Length: 625
Ligand code: ADP
Ligand code: MG
Image (cartoon, rainbow, N blue to C red):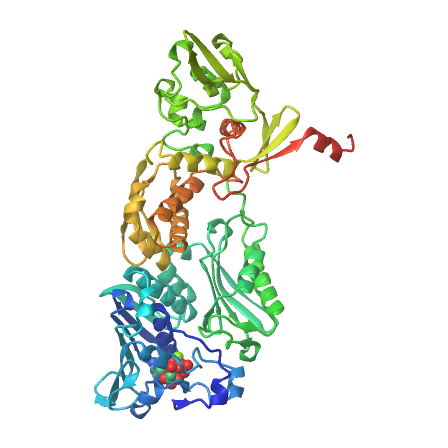
C-alpha cells in the first residue's frame, strides 16, 4: 500500500486545475474511482434524497492507514503520484489528490478504514473540511466514506442541483459507466433503501452490459475485438438494425477510464456508413486500450477527456475493427414496414383519402349549406380529419392560399374545382355566391429514394420530403388539439429498459405521458412498464419514442411549456411516415394536396418540405435552353 503524501507545489501546478465536485454524481464518481484504485472487487454505493442528505461508498480495497487518514484530505495529497515524470504514465484513475479535500470542504464527512491484514481500523470526522481526531474503530477490511449534507455551506451550489430523482438518476448513470469500465468489480447501487443496480463483477463485459443497460440492448449486440497499431479495441456495438435515433448509448473507455470522445464517436459512426438509416446512431460499449505513455489523461479536471498521442491511429483502429465486425454480419436490408403498420388505428385521413374520394365525399358544399362568413368559429385555414370524413360537421371554411388561382364562380360549377372545398362562402343579399379557389391538382408522378414525392405542377416539378411534410401535418394537428390523442391499450404490457437519466425524467413526467396517450408505470431498476400507447404510434416504435422524448425533456429543462412541445414534436415525428419506408401512393397523394394548399411549408424543425425544379432549370441542365 503506497503512502499518501502531499505533492510538491511544482508537481501540483502541472495538474489540470478545476472543480470536480458539482453534484452528487461527481462525488460518487470520485469516491468509487478511489475504491477501484484501492483494488476493491466490490463497491456498494448508497444514497438518500438524490445524494443530498447522504452518500455512502463502501469498498473492500486495501484501506488507508490510521495515521494517514488526515493526510488523505489535504489538497494535492495522493499516494498515486510522486513526481512530474509519473504524470506521463498514469495507471490509476485518480492522481490529482484533490477529490477528498474538495468533497470534505463542502459537506460533513466521515471515513472508516481498516487496512488489509490489520487488526483494527480507524475513523475520522470532518466538518466543512475541518478534521476531528482519528479514533480507533472496529470495521471490516476496506474503506467506507460517508458524505452528509452536501453543499450545506455553499448555498449557491445547492441552488443548481436538480430534483432528487434527477440527481439520483445521474448517480445511476455514472455508476453504469463505471460498472462497464470495470466488469471485474461488482457494483451495487442502493437508492433510498432500494437496490437499483447490482453487477455481478464476473469480469465479463456482456454481464455488466446486461446488468446496466438491460436485456433489449444486450440482446442486439455484435462483439468487437481487434487491434491496430499500438491500439487494442474490444467490446460490443449495436446491430445496425437495432440502432436508435439518439447517440446517448455510446460508451467509450480508455485504459479503464470512461471517456467522452468525439474522435471515437465519429470513428464508430464512420464504420456504420451505408449500413444505417439516416438519423440512426449506433450504440456501443468499447474499450480502447493504448500503452499508458500513448495517452494523456491530465487534460481536464474531471478526467473524462483524454488526448491520444496518435489520434489518427486510434480512430482508424476503431473504424476498422468495428467495420470488420459488422462485415461479418450480413448487410442489413433497408428498413421497411407494411403500409398497414404505417396507418393508425384511427384511420388517419390519408388512409382512405385521395383527391377523388375527397371530392366524392361531398366536401364541396352545396349552395343551400352556405354559411355566413363569421357565423362559425375563426377561419383556421386547415382541413382536419373531421372536415374530410364528416362534411356535415364542418364549421370552418379554409381560406384559399396565395399562389392559387382564385376566381368567383357560380355554385353549379363546383365540379370543375380541383379542391372546391377550399372556397370561401359569402352571402351577398339574396344571392349566394361561392368565391372558389380553383386550381389543378399537382400530378403525383411517383416517389424516388423512398423519401421524396415527385409531383408535376404545370411546367414545374416539385420534390416533397414525405417524412418532413407528414411530421408537420401531425404536429399541426396535435398542436391545434383538433382531436385528443387517443390511447391504445397493449394486449401485453411492454417493459422498456432505459438509461438512468431518461428513466428519471420520464418518471417525473408520467402525468404528461398519460395526457398524450402513454400509460406507464415504474417497474424499478430503470424499467418502465408500458400498458397503453398513443394510437398514432406503432408498437415497434415505443422504446424509440420514449427515449427521444426523454432526451428532449432532459435538454429542455423543467419548463412545462417546453415539455408539452417536446411531447408534440416527438409524437409528430414518430407518427409520421419515414424516409426509407415504403408508402402507399394514396398517402403520398394526400400529402401532395396539403403541400399544394400551402398548409405545410416547413417541418417542425424548420427544414423545408418541398423544393421546386422549373422546366427552364431542367432544360438548362440538358442544354435545351
Ligand atoms: P487521488 O485519488 O487523486 O489520489 P483523492 O483525494 O481522491 O486523490 O484521494 C487521496 C488519497 O486517499 C488517495 O491517493 C488514496 O491514497 C487515499 N484513498 C482515498 N480513497 C481511498 C480508498 N477508498 N481506499 C484506499 N485509499 C483511499
Ligand atoms: Mg481520487
